[in-house]
Image 1 (spheres, rainbow, N blue to C red):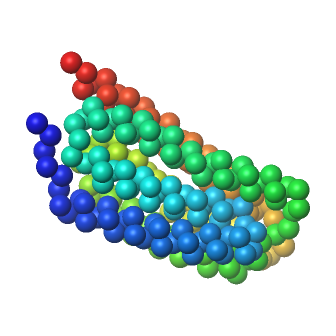
Image 2 (cartoon, helix red, strand yellow; image 1 turned 45 degrees about the horizontal axis):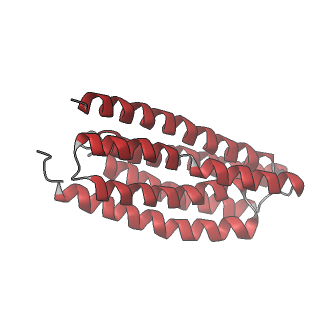
Length: 197
């Protein structure tokens, strides 16, 4: 018998979804306006986080085996921002130009505030839902690390007028997502095996 989902956890996940969807719109608009690889990667990551947490909300009451299957699927979702980053890198290499440093830095600061808030809320529950909540926590934590790098890239861009820091941070975000996807998939696969009769 699968235990009923914790109502407090449902409220946390609902807040996390709302924050991620809201900031996706803000950061995507800034990213497209200033032509930032790092912000495109990070904004798509906010949309991915919202999708991830919606799926977790739906799967909370499922069996361990069912949640593990969803966890393996979520590992693939964690790779979506990597694809968006690759597309933006291609366009950036074709027409290299540094993004505006101030909007880049301010967008990074806003994203950091959202992601730290989400990670803090999820940290209290990350062991309650196996690979699902581990995926949500890792995603928010990785995003907060990426936001620190975006803020730093804004400072370096202001000093150098180079597009290289933005490109490097975009690639770093892609690597973080690949690493998180591998960890979530491995945990979900282990859960699935342990749930087999």
